Image 1 (cartoon, rainbow, N blue to C red):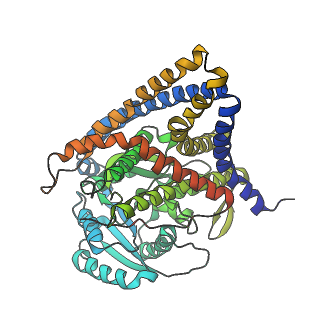
Image 2: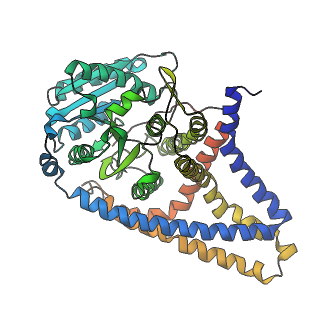
Image 3: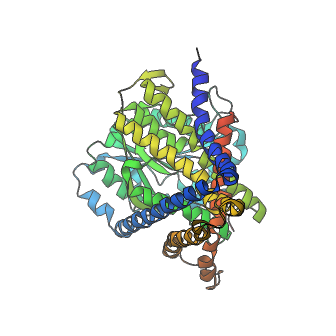
Length: 504
């Protein structure tokens, strides 16, 4: 009989196996049955075209909501709610090696929020292994911002604690329990606190906390909800490379389409969540890489599927990948995308816990309510299909689709279908470029004001850079996703990698 560990390993192998089976069959059948592959590629291209139209439609929906919400006076709406003064914000911000310029920018934006700062607790958590740098930065932050908030809690996460991997999740896990001690000391009810889990470079929109407060207070099940803002990568976008901008904005546009379909949403990157829910699941998981999205699954399983992510059409802005040299920037972008693609580790986790009706916490495995079958299937399908398409679609579309046309000439080259297939594929790919055109236009509207040291001609470059989209989809989309799923398949687990922060 297989042990639990071996059963879990089999689940880990499923995504990568499907990806490699697809690639192997595509290559082999291009020689043996080229006509089959051409049919498949055309059907897949039609499917991809519908995906693009779907993308454009939901992008338009989200864009209208985004424009509406960033121009709303959310604080006025909050102040109209009875008892709003009894609710508090907490910001949990793990940090590692970020320079003081990054932290100062983040705290300056927090302090400039259109929300009473005496209702805000900020937790800055550094790493013991980087103690000298953190202590120096923390001293500056405390001096400049310590008196602005209700509480500024500065803590150091010890190194090499049992059951942890080195990463943001372990830091946040430790910070969560330390924050709970402070909340208990202040005697604030858990259900009166909503927590924002931010990267150290996250700069909030002035209306962010007011919007969050309104959505949290008015939610009928606020203790069983997370809140997902729009993630922009604007902090240093005028100084970053074109490929960095295209990849970063691709992430923003993907998230915008997901926000319009909240029944599909996971938490991603910087997000907010009910403090009571965090306490119930023992905070962020300390032994995984993708803690920002795993926290949704922890809560979803804990409450038997009675947990949701609420869309927020208010932005938070972070850094695009930028290092000291162009080559290091490219390498860092690849590593960042690979880390995000490591979200495929959620697939075995979901299958395992959905079937067992338990949740792993610091207290051991606890029994949880059964999730309805349709919810389990929907979330498994959305994650599995998304990860599979991420890894395979660009390679199938732009690379492997050429093979049957090259190798099928001798067998079926004289047929009318073979001769028209390249034209059909070209037409479908050209039609699919509609998504690229829409992205390029919206990108210009999302740009922050042009710095004085940047030429007006840079706008032309900002538009022209979108011709790099196919390159970006393969080099910084498919390939890191394939590597992530292959690593999981082989049991070569990915550790947490901190994206280097650099600004001009």
